Image 1 (cartoon, rainbow, N blue to C red):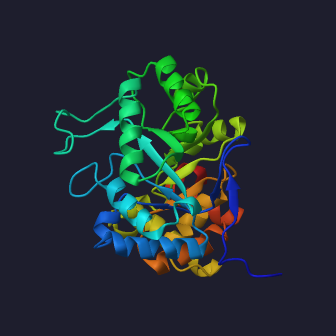
Image 2: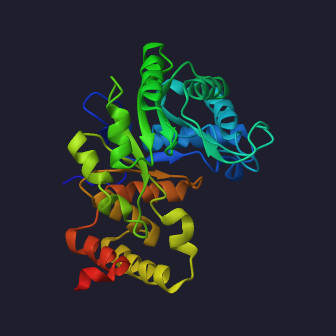
Amino acid sequence: MADNTGSLSRVKLHKNGPEFSSLIWGSMRSEEQFTSAAELADFLRFLLDQGITTLDTANTYGSPHPYTVEEFLGDALRQTGLRDRFEIVTKCGIQRVSPHRTENRIRHFDFTEAEIRRSVDRSLNKLGIDYADVILLHRPDYLMDPTEAGGTLDALIAEGKTRYVGVSNFSPSRYHLLASKLNAPIVTNQVEFSPIHLDPIANGVFDTAMIEGHVPMIWSPIGGGRLMTGDDPYVFKVRAVLSEIAARNGLAGPAEAAIAFVARHPAKGIPIIGSGKHERLTAAIEAVNKPLDRQDWYEVVTATSPMLEL
């Protein structure tokens, strides 16, 4: 049988949704990782060579201040001239205190029509694109009017500003609330999932994904780096188990074993990797293509949740 550990498959997010690469690159820390847009442009070309065609960003990302990453990524995209080779996901709704948003005096959330439209227009302008492939509502706005938010998202599709819509960090009840006021399908729910964050298994998020027929996007599949650098006994124990599993499965290390753990769940969530290092991306591709077997997967869960030993 041919060795396909170095190639990426394509994933249909929803029967009426887009097709993504089975590993997504996240731009959140790109300003910290690349010294210029030209350097990032070279990295984007590398991603295409590896079959990673899906880029994740958000209006609120930026360092040292929020709201700057999209412009940086947009400059790099323009330099490549390859926008049509990528699927671009961006998000709206988080309002952060920043010199670029002097009207914000406190971190909050806003899914009103005016803010969704303002955010989407800013994102498209900064990214230098005519449309996004998917727009996500970024974290729940507890003051969301579902009719207003749903109608706005449907209108953005009709106006050609996005091809599809989705959500991020939505509970099953909030997912269904928004879906009840949308004509378009919710094609994904971007959520946190890793060996040290198992909530989507227990809170119905993954069950909802499989029932409703969408594929989740997975942020922080290696615990935001805590899984690799944390020194508390709990994380140390999980990291040791992942290291043993990586050695047994020919993976580069515990980070890759964590990605293979995420890839094993039947919800088929797509990991988002934010590294700017070539070797990390190639190792992650191998991990996505080597999901853990059942016993290895449960060994990780048992390390995380000792109650399963009962």
